[in-house]
Amino acid sequence: MSTQAPKDRVIKFSGLDWIVRTNPTIKKGPGPNLFSDSEENVWVDNNGKLHLKIIHREGEWYCAGVYSKKSFGHGKYTFYVNSDVTKLDKNVVAGLFTYYDDSQEIDIEFSKWSLEENMIGQYAVQPSSKPGNINRFDLPENAGPTIHSFDWKSNAIHFFSGKNTANKQELAQWSYSGPDVPSAHKERLRLNLWLYKGQIPSDLEEQEIVIDSVKFEKQT
Image 1 (spheres, rainbow, N blue to C red):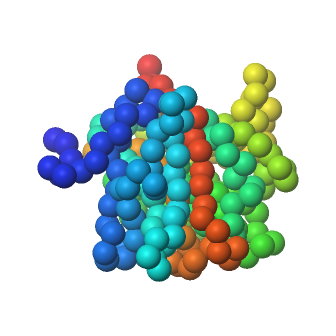
Image 2 (cartoon, one colour; image 1 turned 180 degrees about the vertical axis):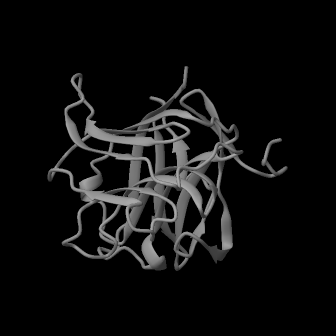
């Protein structure tokens, strides 16, 4: 059953249909923030790349997010990120994740969480507040385009990050086999760009991330 509402904006990216998130008047999580489905916030360019942008309009900051119409379940999710995530403002969060509810979620996130000394990346299995459910990692300065993935099985999840080059040079990896590996339900694949605790960017500049493509490989 589709979660699409009659007025939802739907885009095509990486051969998939995505619903563009919108709550333009009431701040909601994560953050909380306002999210807009405008073409200024979310668009696919002529080369098929997805742009998510936090914009400033009429005194408000609007974040960006999309989620797949389809649920995929167990398998390998790979994200080819064109933008250099090490250059994100310290108050900005970029998320690549599957979500069913707040306790059944698999995350790859990039943020300094408002602290310049923080490492930029984290892998998490919710609830991330539980010991052993999160692994933070850093990326080299000026990392450039990167590739990130998680291979979700019924009893384990393996995360990987590397350079988006022919040899996919490894930058980080982590395996999780604890009690909170989510079951496959009707979770959706989600991509978002938002402001931590609803704070405005520290540099007062609009923020953007570009994703070349997303790939899903079903378990055999």
